[in-house]
Length: 629
View: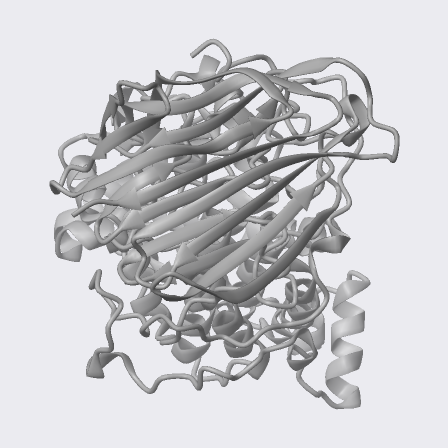
């Protein structure tokens, strides 16, 4: 495990340029069956609405601000310049008292188990129990990032609401809300006042207002209403100036929701609406993947838009078409990361987000479509043959300004057959501080924590502190095609990155070919000199294949293969193919590893490692994963 958690090269601080990831938007469909909400098979369900045409392409040109007259344009401009909303909405009148004009019925549901834990007296965050009475809600308290997020975003309100009837939850909601307001009464600094957390908190207060405004604590209601008003005014100023990304989207969505649900809110709504639609165009690539390339951020974007549309419905107003278009655009890339068990792959620091959580989100959004398989901007290529699914990271890591928990995962892949995962990435860096020790969070972002090739125990992209990334893989060239082979057509993806070109003078090229029936995945890792004149000498390399939870590896007698027994009894075989050109002392062996699930729980696993020395003039390594029986 030493190489897996090797320190990152934190001296490299320059941002990446991922503009080479592709140029054109792609259709929403591939050969997969459409999503079936709440199911793992991916087959159609008549209860999920009409299927979007597989060939439909959504482009950012569809996302345009709603047309408005000169009067609304003036109101929006005046509000942006600081004219109070009540002056624009109702001149010559006293400002109306803060109150909510409607009750929102959001389809977004929380985690029932986490809500039940709250009613039992403790938070349940990333697998760790925290007694409510022992939590320090002050924004200056030093807490794990996951705990800070839950406490200050009030996402726990969704969990509580999902756990029991409202009357059984009000007292718990009031207790926690009162403690939080006492600790954070005024807008300030720290995690509580990050735009993303403040936006999520305001949205939670507006959507679940009955839990915090209709209880027996008469003193709390005016405090909550004052906090709603103050947070909305704070976000009016801060959200538009926040850098593009999910934080800005969340803040502007909350501003728009406040404009819909608070008195004299039309100026705020017009202001937030226009700013939000502009910002949405900067959130994603042309095929709908968020620029952070983070599955959790993709899901949050969908959830926030679903909440906001519910606020429009509560206020009896039509939401702009752009919000529906963007939500439809966000879903197919997310589905491309679903494995056969319905859960997501471990990418960009996330654990394997559960099938139930993904299905509930898509059901709430009401979008029924197919996953993308050839995603140029999102970057995760999807291959499917029979019941076998391969996910392949064929794009540069996110730029520093977009990264959340950025990982050096370029050219890594995951493979599953049916409900079982055979090859995975470790994942879980964003969940560090819970059951995943914080000290290994940085290592989980490293190239060695992913199923790909590593040179000299170095990251293909520098892993910096606070989730950021530095120099490394800036260009990824991708070619995808169907080829004829044994058993009919096969899907082939060839990609290369330049993350090692500057340091070692080598470009890593990986070719994956999945047989049409899904019984074979042929792989080839090639090291090509980055210049005409290759460097002399040799360098150490390792090609890592992290095995899924419960997979048992048994090495062959000749040391060139391994039998891989999956938890469901299916048997796969891994083999080195031919001689490793340009390499010496090549050996295949098995090492310890770990895999992090969607609840933040680390599980001990194993990994196969092809290791040796390779010429700086290049090398070639072929391998095969084959289903037996």
